[in-house]
Length: 186
Image 1: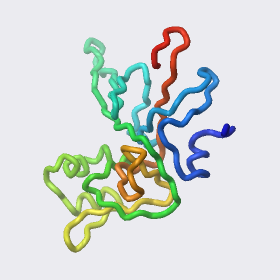
Image 2 (image 1 turned 30 degrees about the vertical axis):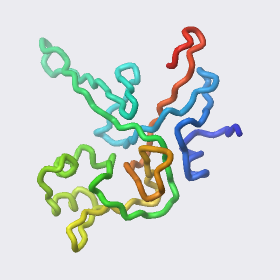
Image 3 (image 1 turned 135 degrees about the vertical axis):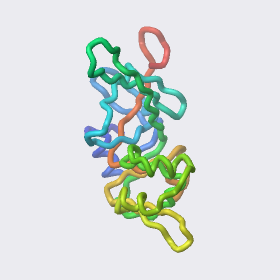
């Protein structure tokens, strides 16, 4: 079935998008969705240029080039890794998820969240200050309560609804297609 809409609108109307779906493009006849990258539109967002990245099976490694403030100093290069997910779900409901194995895109720059993700020190109070959506229960388990418009992301299409791997306010799509000139996958 062909939809004349964008993928974001399709996600909110159908509640789900998966890799393997065929989409339309003005440049490429029938690209296939390879996966989804969690993204947040804020001042800390990196404007992605696909030409400066490498796609692996489950990650997009982006080479961010930052200009130097000194004229005689070369620009600094920094690798930023974005996970790629296979399924998106947006059911307009709140979900109470354990933060332990959850990638929260809006917190990726927070120092205390990074420490928590790297299994270093856990600062409950600092984590709770990082987002009003974070809470700690009586057994010291840390939870993240999603907002209704947040997108749930899954590593595999076959994961059940309660195996959420990431949460993000928006997403980027990685598509692939067979190059008609070379016959290779682009």
